Image 1 (cartoon, one colour):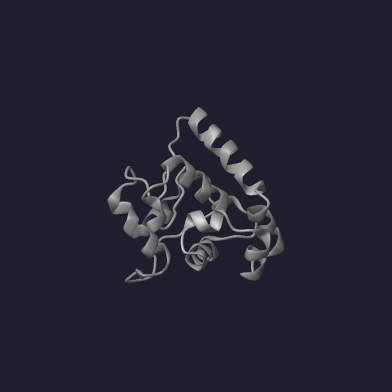
Image 2 (image 1 turned 90 degrees about the vertical axis):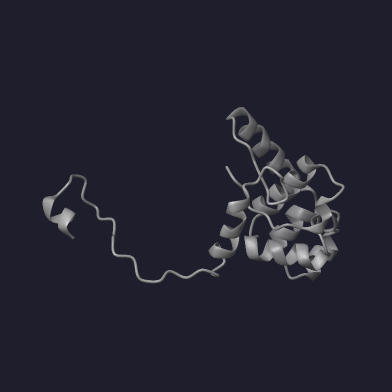
Length: 140
């Protein structure tokens, strides 16, 4: 499992495990996608400030009520702890972009996923519902 999270200046003096849990909390909050999560971190200045925000402060940002309540009441921290436990039990390492172990060449994929890179031409292969190999499919 890999959790992508933007780099922030808050990473300097805070334990990496704490930051990872906060990114997981943000990513697992209902009704909150990556773009809005990035905007929230930007709005509050850093991940630490967002994590300390009160419910009223979160609601003012225009979040869905369910997202604001999940983050503002601390409910969202329970899920990440459970997720980290499951990951550890499965031998999976959860990484954020702030983690020094995060592969540098994968950092650029975030901008690609955001649409910075465009394909040069349309895809030429498609999946079909056939369960068995068909000779005519090999020529297409």
